[in-house]
Structure formats: structure tokens, C-alpha cells
Image (cartoon, rainbow, N blue to C red; front, side):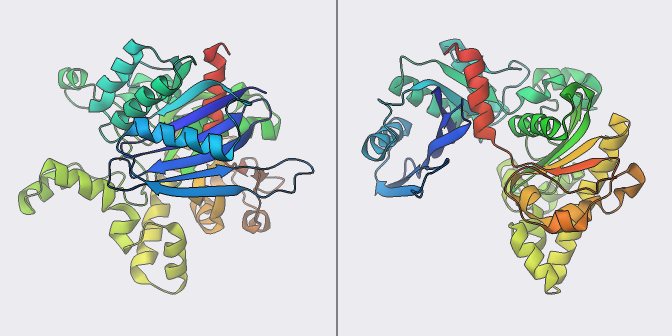
Length: 405
């Protein structure tokens, strides 16, 4: 058994999974949150699965002061010791860290050294909401597991294959170079995992396929993947650009910011909050959860219906553009919370793509399922899939590939 502990750390919380990479199963997962508040919270779940297993998953919760990430890691270690699995009996061989922004410096999973940690911290200017939390988690984890290799896996790394025409913004190049302004793309770990799983499912080499992956969750992105390489993606300098999301606006005229600044006297910080936390489906309809939007739309609610139409319109626009960029498409995959669970969204998004060889099987699309499945017709020139993503497993795989464990 080769076990990897995967850490996804934010500024006031971190999630973790203990994964047996050989069987590709999670042994435990947990969440430590409200770090730095008067009372923090921790949740630890022991996962039971496999042939002949009759035990059900067991979850343990606690509330206690967690002043910083170092204490949070001790809370996690205490949970493993008290509830299992024992890290003594099933010791991790490496620690994998999710890092959102790797800039143009990191294009593959990278063993963490003091210099790498400094570079990740330096890139916080490009991801002020994400990288500082990752750095705190890395420091706490390196202290708690000083004898183990630590590996950073970057959301942006998969998109380092974008051609200059795709990642370059049409602004003054000196200013762009000075401030490292370009398209980086995100959700790369998910897009990589899904595209490889899709190729395996259809039984064709990755190097032969033109794919489009739609990662539709509260955050959403779409990527065009040409023979295993990301060649275009919807998120840009930050995760704000692109599709309409739960609380993020996605694409909009940059002059909107100027208008709001002048007429509403909004500061840069207020604009950031407005576009990232008060826009998207929440701004359009007052709800960020697609399930609520669909229920209200079905009941005839006007704002919810408009929000849904805007959401679908943007997806179709990107699908059409990416089919053109690829010169056609062989596989389209839906993943993440909305992509995996909303048959209504999938059907609406693909409704106009018959001209491109996309033929959805309505019965297959409506059927519920847990694993990867085909939802296009048998004679559809383009295969359409639902592929459950597993970013933690992908991080564990990549960690093991470079950790030398």
C-alpha cells in the first residue's frame, strides 16, 4: 500500500484526504475550518469500501480553538490517531499540496523546497485569495511531516501548453510583462484527470483525440484539449473570467468596472467583491445553487429563467468557439457538481450542436449514475460523457510520480 496525504489549504481552512494510490481509494477525508476564529471546527471521516465491506462511513466532529494552521494540523493528526486509519500502521509516503497559481514558473508537479515555497508565496500577487493559504498549509505540513517529501501540484500547470495566441491579452506588452498579466487558466488538475479518463473510457489513445471538458461547479471553466494538450481555456489571469458561475460574473466588458467606479464610487476591493461574490447566478437570480435555479425556473420564476438562459448562452458560445479552434471535436465531457448532476443543463448546452455531430440520447442523459458514462447516441459522431472528477486522486498520482516514494 502506497498512501499519499493530499492537502487543499485555504486562508482559514484546509481539506485533506488520505489516498491509497495503488487501489485509487480514499481511506479518510476531513475538513478543518474557521482557523483563527474564537472557535474552530473539525470534521474527520473514515471511509469504508470494497468487496465484502459492511461498515458504513464514520464521521467525527469537534469544535475547539484553532488559532493557526499549525494547530489545525495537530487537530488533524489527533483525529487520525483517535479514529483512524492509523498513520503509524498506514504511513503516508508523501504529502501532496494543491496550489492554485503556479504562474509561468511551474508547469509540472514540483517537490517543495524552501525556494519553491518562496516562489509560491511570491505568486500570491496573482492569486491573493488562494496562494497565501496554500503557503500557510505548506509550512504547517512541512513542520508536521518533516521527514516526508512534499509536492506542489498546480491548478495552472496543465494550461502551460497554451499557445501564445491563446494566453496573450491585447494590452501594452511592457505593462503585461511587468505585472505578469496573461491567461493562466485554472481547474487544470480536473481537466487533466477527466480528459485522460475519457480517453480510457472510449478506448482511444489520448494523443488521437480532440476533447472539450466542461468543469461546471460553483466555479466553472471549459477547456479545449488537443491530443492531450490544453490549447484554450476559459479562465484567465484569475478564475473570474469565462463562464457564468455561482457568484462570479465571468466575461464582461472591462468598461463595466469604470462605470461602477465612477457612478457607484466603488473601490478596487469593492469591485473585486462585487464581481467574485455578488455576481453570476447569485446576482442574476438571488441564488447560486443550480438546483435552486432549476426549481424556480420550472415554477415560472422570471429572474431564475433569465439566469439559466444566460448561463447556457455563455456555455454554447464557448463550445462553438472551441470546436472551431480544434477544427472539430471527438469527445465532450461534463464534470463537477452541475456537470455531473444536471441533465437539464447538459441537454440545453448541447441542444444546438447537432450541426457539429453532437447527438444526445435523452434517456441516457436523464438516467442517474455514479461512474463515468456515455450520454450520446450510439451513432453520434461526437461522444458525450459524464465523467466524475477526482482532483484529490490526480494530485496523489502526480505527487507520487515525482516524490521518489
